[in-house]
Image (cartoon, rainbow, N blue to C red; front, side, top):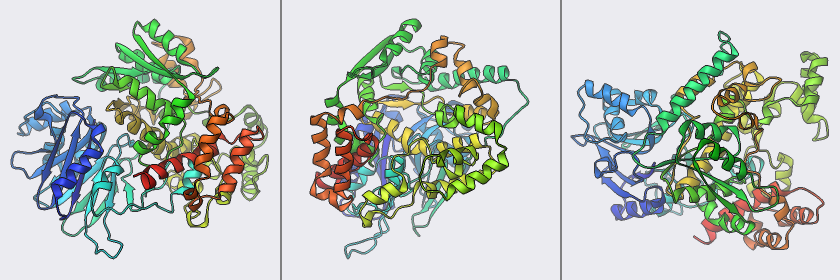
Length: 621
């Protein structure tokens, strides 16, 4: 787990600029740094040593003749298998780090290398012979990858520089980078709580999507991006429910075994839910880590402590106060690179900080809900089940088409959901502002981006034949998971130099999960049925069956306390906030919530986190 930066093109003081870019991400790799400069490219690397702690595993790493160099962030869990195959083909290895299989793997297989990898990764290969770069991001988007093409502005000519790296903030140190807010990003963000467009909040900076790779021709500047992997939710009805449970338990245990490999100490995050509990029970670490809120009924760490005691491992806990929560927001938004208003980012910040005091690697349960159908949004309510039982699907489809043209009134969403066409109503796990509400609060200059349905449409278009449940899971795997869940997991942990591994998000686990029949994923007994029964093999009933709660945060109560009302008010009434928002509308939301007239905490927080991010990068920077 590390971080890399790089750029093409000629600028003055290239080494100095590269060093400054590396310093911006030193938190990703405090153990050592390295660089490699040629006339064509500058590569920089910060290392958090996990495998082969010696300098032999340092990056950038090259082959024997220097024609191929790699910078790589992540872990390749099948690197020993690939190494054995490459050694049989005649390649020589000089260290025990997984990075070297990327070097020789590219020599042997070229771009087909990505088809062989099992792991979490973002990497760039510099191919000196062909004067090009080749890079890729893992199939789930566990590791981040950003790029920027300097086109010139403010009267300066286009330089042709191509910048890339693990975090956007490193680009700030490059002289060709022009820092500006992307006007298209704020509107979809208000709806979905995370940066949902391919272009980031920094104008001209793009994310390489998950399961995509690219080639960049250094001589011509031609950039070609392609998808190299796709999931396939197609039911396999050849097995019984119990057979699926048996296989699930086997593949999860095997994945945890692969994810435990490290030359440093490994621990586990642990909440009260089934996902992290299952991982902890498979791993059996020396220590588990949990956080809760020091407020009334918002502390669930007792579940983690109780399970840890049953497993015979130590549970280390921390309680978070309201002051802790608000004091951390500027640092959190800085490390996120882009505004993100998932409330769980704050407890995750403190959880990572706590764990990093004891271990270098942690395992966690992210991804189980998307792969095995664990979200409540995937299930029908009791009223929906009754309606579907008595009203034929063709009639429900007609009612759904009528509802599409109705205003946002009571009953509209019910009819849309019962029509079994998620394309018309489901935009993922987070929906904050409706499009009309976002339009009302934004200034015209920033009321320009696509709405949530426009962003979701091309994702749905790739899977027209999927069933309703599989469409929802597919959407979340391609938007919510990489854009929110995995982004905050990576950024919050790497801010504290902690490697996070997610065994559910493994290629072999995915190959199993995508063929579990929908009726075994969700049925009358609840959601995530195959996984829950598999987890029950090593967890007590209470943990295997407990409903998902996420990280409950008492924000709605804090925003009715004068101290925290004043904190938000200072941002909402700042002169620079008027560039983006109708600040009277913001204050109306805040005042109504403070007075108990409305529950606006999510809208308030989503607006606030954008302003905190903007202040940190464009006013304080």
